[in-house]
Length: 71
Image (tube, rainbow, N blue to C red):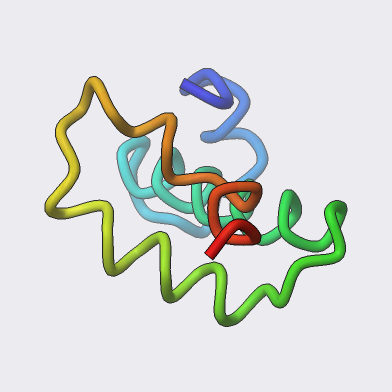
């Protein structure tokens, strides 16, 4: 997990519940990573979110902004 539930709940009190706060923190992590690596945030986000449903949990590490750059 990129952030623990406690931090997520404290940082995203508007989320409604702890699971939603955790999901928001994942989304923001994708955006910040793309921004840090100077990658097109929108295109990278669309690519990652379109691939995540069909990717096994053991292969989630391949869905990174670095992998997106190699396309």
